[in-house]
Each structure stands twice: as C-alpha cells, then as structure tokens.
Length: 528
Picture 1 (cartoon, rainbow, N blue to C red):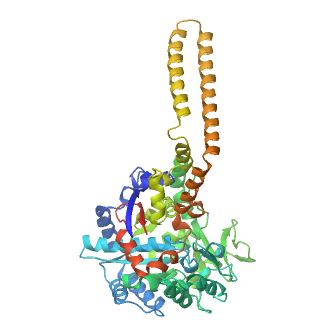
Picture 2 (spheres, rainbow, N blue to C red):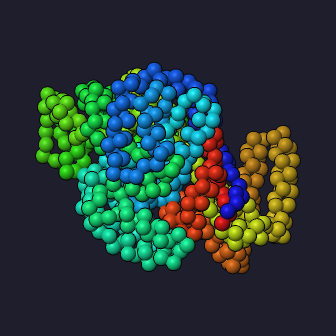
Picture 3 (cartoon, rainbow, N blue to C red):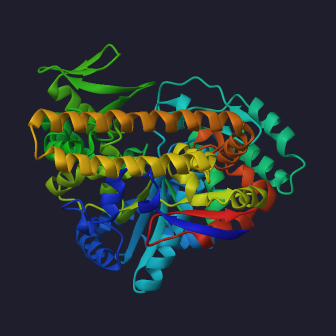
C-alpha cells in the first residue's frame, strides 16, 4: 500500500461550504474551536478548571464497570487510572452501533482520535490524552444500523426494535453464516469470522457486541469505550435536564446561532426542539409540553411538572438526550478537549456554542474527520491512461466527462473561433449603435443574444452527437467512476472494514493510522 495523494477539503466540491468556512476561520466566534496547539493549550486550562476530581473518580469507576467484561490492554488500564488525575484529558469521537461497525469511516474516525492523542502527548508531555469512543447506544432508529455492505454482499440483522438500540439482544445470526461463506478463503477471513461470532453471540446486546468488536480492534491503542445509557453518568447532568424541561434553554439560547447559520448557509443540520430530550421505557419517545403537562409522544404517559421532576430525580436513566443535547451530555461527563466527527456532526455542534456558554461548560475544539480511499493499481492506471487525475473524480464529474468527450474536437474548436469572431463583431457594432437611436442599440444587443443562443444549441447538439459516437469512452469513464464511488457515493460510506481487513489484517489498521492526517482535514488516497 502506498499513498497516492492527499486532497484538502477546500479542494473538494462536495464538502459543505460551512465546513470549509469553519476550517478557514471565516465564521466569527469559532476561531478558538479549530485545531491548533494554541487552542489546545487554552482548552487544557479551561477543562482543568471546570472538571472536578469527584467527576474524575466517578468516570474512572464507570469505565472500570462498563469494560469489566472485556480483556483490557495495559494501556487501557493505565488510561482508566490516569483519568483520576488532573492532568489527563480525553479526545472523543462518537458513532452509532452499526452492525459489525457499518461503513468503514467508523474505523477511520477512531484511528484519527487515537493519533490525535499521540500528537498531543508529543507536544504537551506533562499531560495525558485518552482516546474515547462514545457509543450512540440510546438511538432508536434500528433500520439505520442493522446492516453493512461488502464488495459482493449486503448483510442484515432482524430484531425487534423501537427502544434504545443498545439494549436489543441478538437472536438472528443468519448473516454470520452468509458472511462466513464470503470470507472463509480470504487471508485474514478466519480472523474476521471469529470477530463477528464473538461479538454477535446470541444473547449479547448490540452494546456488548460493539464493545467486544471495537475492543478487539483498538485495545492495544488504549482506546476506551463509553456507554451513555448509564444512571451514574446521567446523575451528573440532571441539573441541565431539569433546566431543559422547565425553561427550554437549549432552544432559546441556540436560536441566534441557528438563525445566523440558516441565513448564510440555507439551513442547519438539526433544528432544536423546545425540549431536546426523549423518555426511555421499552421504547424511546419524545417529551413534549402542552403548556400544562409533559406528554410522552406516541405513548399514553403524562406527567405534571412535579411528577416529571421527581421522575428525573429518582430515575435519570429514563431521560435520553437527542442529537443536539448529546454533545452537552458528553462534554459534561468527560474531561474532553476535542470532538472528531463527520461534516454533518460538526455542523450541528456549531449551533450549540452559545448554549455551552450559558451552562458554563467549555465548548470543545471541533475536528472534521479525515476521509480515506483505497484504490486498486489497475483503477489508477486506467485513470492515468485517460489523462485524468484522481482529483477529477471529486469535482463535477459531468463537466469532466463532457470535457473528455469533446477533447481536441475540431468542430468545437471551429465553433469557439467563430463565436469569438461574432463577439468581437458585435462589440464593434454595439459601440457604434450607442451613437444612434436607443431602439437600434437594443436591437443589436437582442440579435447578439439570439446568435449566441444558436452557438449554445450547436455545442449542446455536438456534445449529444459525440456521446453517441464515443459510447465506449463514456462507458469506461462510468466504470472508473463506480470503482472510485461504489453505489455512486464515497467508498468509505459504502464498504465495511472487512473488505480491506480480509487481505491485510491488522497491518491495514497500522497503515491507516500512519497515513492519517492530524492538523488538516483531507481525503487520503492509497493504492492497494
């Protein structure tokens, strides 16, 4: 494996403008929320002063409890103990409990979190930095996470859903036998099959399955795994949840930022609700307020103000944060400096800056995660033979295709020459026409527009004719595009990590870690 290119997010057309502006420091108020050693230095100071020794002891005990069923590395044990001390901080990423980790970017974001900790330790040797994976165990959209894809197959698990997905117990193991058929002859296929069987043993919950899998992959790097579906953790955020129920503070405080982002970028990623909490029973349902009582949407459950506050006090585990409240929960219970997430995640974190200020919790540094792309040498050779660059496949590909079809076309050259002559002629005519009556000048301009439209039609017809004539070239371009973008989207959003691990094993993880960028957000392209 070798690195072919690293393309900055600034040079990729499909990266949202909001993300580009954030990275470029073009959004006022977020200058200290971007990656820099100066910003990390400030963040360390802020978090040291806001995260108490009691919180540290509770957190360390929770990690001991939640990870007790796993075989931990010496680095993990050391990290748990270090969290009790005032000089240890976390760098966090989060993700859903996708079946067998889901799309491969799950692996990339964890590796970037790990490498960021290494980088910070080198630059701040007096402090410790612990990589943390936050499991989205309370999400209730099972359909989003119940599958994964390889190059050849689609795998799915079927279970009863509706509540917190992490609590779902595994019964359906048909996908394991099908997976075994695909990978039994691969170099590291046996390792993959054992991983899958160990994690998805019948009776395990989806939370346990992901804990087992992630620990198997990343324990040697010291990664700690945290489950927010915890009474002990939620005890620490009861005051914030209480304020949310009584005063709708997140909605009110974030409104200015939401309006600002909407005005400049068209829309926000997630719109805050009046109450950004769910109620957890056998299902997970939104909490609504009708002006008098608190209603659990789609359930026949209603609370008075006194009743719901008693419920929160006695059973905080029954209250679950939504997508916007979850970052607040995370930053409340962790001595966290930075969050590494996908573009969509970073975009909704940006809505929360003023709310963090209101509740007096340091807003973390936000790091848009890197992307990775592994291409076969033969695909890269095809791209080179067509005199294209890999960057072309991350721009408007219709424009690139049209350019190739009309490359060195004599008719197009002639049309462009004649069009330029026409433009020059009309330029002279318009200059003279301005010296005479106004209606004549308008006629000249209208005639110019009419004749230029004719050239536009001719070029469009020429492109159509050439596409028919060069059908084979178009087919080659389309096939290469699908090699780069399986299912017409980024590779990392389609394939599971098993596609790469099957051939390269743990050395593939090491390569990803080695090539991962830390200080900039980039697309990293490697040949295999």
